[in-house]
Amino acid sequence: MIRYPSPRISALVPSVLVALFVLVAATCQAGAQDSQPSSPEATPERVTVGVRLSAPFVIAEGDGFTGLSVELWEDLASRLGLQWDYRTYDTARALVDATAAGEVDVAVTNLTVTERRAQRVDFTQPWFDGGLRILTRADQGSSFRDVIAGLRDSGYLRAYAWIGFVILAATLGMTIFYRRFDSDFPARWRDGLAESFYNVMVVVTSGKMAMSKNLFGWIGRIFQGIWLLAGVALIAYVTSTVTSVMTALAITSQINSVDDLPGKTVGVLDGSVGEDYAEEAGLRILAFPDLENAADALLDGTVVAVIADTAVLEYYAKTHADQPLEVVGRIFEPSKYAFATTRNDGLRRPLTIEILKAHEADEIEALRIKYFGEGS
Image (cartoon, rainbow, N blue to C red):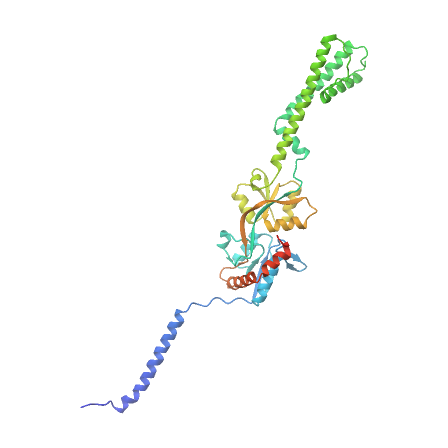
């Protein structure tokens, strides 16, 4: 005999089925939400931008800034709907420190990507190829002071002192000699010493005898010949020593590559990659807050060269054509420039995407040509 459920139970079945369906649907939805990755942090609408003056990338203009880095940043930020306020920093080190500490959201300048910096801040996609070169004086040469210092270091000044003593002794000896044996020689000591000094110097500088009078026959002629030979040897010695020192200075004072820098004082920009490189290479350095001060030190002889970013040095030399400066040597320590952001602030990814778009549209190349010209 078949038993059928009571009407009360039959009425509860649809309600139970609906409850089970709702429970299963809610569980599936919660699981799907848990399996999805967390959404990234929202991009802030207003940001603080740290800049460091470094022409042609960041240039002060009135109350604001211009330059390749600034133009690129403002274009990218406008596409992202951002508003910004600028804050200036004197050195790259200070700018990176401020970005790492969250004082600024973005660092905008020709900032080189390095491992040490990447441990503290986030970098966007690089947008410019850089590297280091050397700025030197175009009129590299040796001054009179350098020649004297070279003669001293070589020990020639002491020899010259002895030569001077011999000349004075020869002057006195010739005066005494001719006062006794030559009746035509000036009687006054003052006149006699002047005459003898003149004759000695004629022999030393030209190898000729101003006084040709022979008082002792053939013996006197031999003596005069020996005197002439000594004068020729003396002038040859002085000429050869000065020439050798000047040649050595010409070779050692020329700066053509980084290999010529050991043992010399080199200028760098404080907190820059150039400073890091110079320290690791064991060079003797002086750090300057900006390129203007470093170039002044180069011109006044405080440093013999300045190590800095290639693009910055080339632009400085081009815009200061009135100064005897030139960029020499090949690029060393190739590098990349990028914008830096505070860690995990939500700016790096959208900026990187816009930089890639700008690369693909040749917009960054157009900025490079604008500031550096074709073929640079």
